Amino acid sequence: MTLVQLEHVTKTFGKENAVTDLSFEIKKGSCTALLGPNGAGKTTTLRMLAGMIQPTSGRIKFCGIEDGDIRNHIGYLPQHPVFYNWMNALEFLVYVGELAGLTKKSAKEKSLELLKLVGLSEAYKRKIGGYSGGMKQRLGIAQAMIHEPKLVMLDEPVSALDPVGRREVIEMMRELKKKTTILFSTHVLHDAEEVCDEIVIIRKGEVALNDSLVELKRKHQHDSIKISADEELSDWLVGVKQVQGVRDVLYENQTATILVENITEARKNLLSYIAANNLPITSFQISQSSLEDLFMKVVRSE
Image (cartoon, rainbow, N blue to C red; front, side):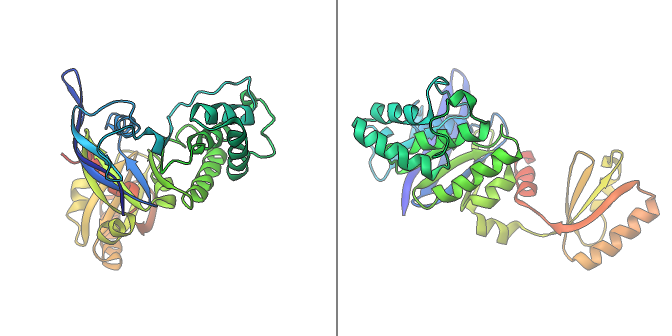
């Protein structure tokens, strides 16, 4: 069942289009990842969905409702959330709950429930100013849930966190999936693969790819060979593309991801090519193409 439908949504700032003709849907009970490079229009899209700014053209349909304020149905965690560091977590959530229209009693009851859900029940009396980055993100998720929204939107919830904080928030999102619909933007493709059901990739303000994670893997996941070197490999990539059994080559940071038809044949042919050309490789690894490989291919295509 569709919860939110974007239909030909465009947002213009002056003469610049931040997003152009966006059309995709968010399914009820799903976790959808909104992917794209910096400047692709992810935050603008989230802000329109949150009702903070209006589309220049097109429309956003929420549960079939085209008119009225949809913000009561939405929880939003911005990329850089702001807290009152002199408050403790319970005080902050009660304050936010009352702003959302809850009574003080209901806000406190809901806050205690959410603090347990996000793993802060033993730290709720501590001042927020003493929280780690991961703890603040979990508190931010709790404030986005305080009014029991039908859709929770998280803007880059893990991008500024260390590995421990990132893992805390990813596990938190797993639990959140059981209770509500999630839309989150991210640059961390591995995290998207871990928790999402649907993928929307936008490039230059337009939808470049939109499908379920299962279908994307079925259609685009191929055997691959990753080759790294201690110097630039770009000069010999043209030759690699001509090696029998090679489908495509992606290259970044002195590492080539080579998509292949038949892993056995391609491995043999590539090793022969490497030896014949005396290439200074430091690793030769057999794997499968990832969501990140697909992402890089999509956002770099013209």
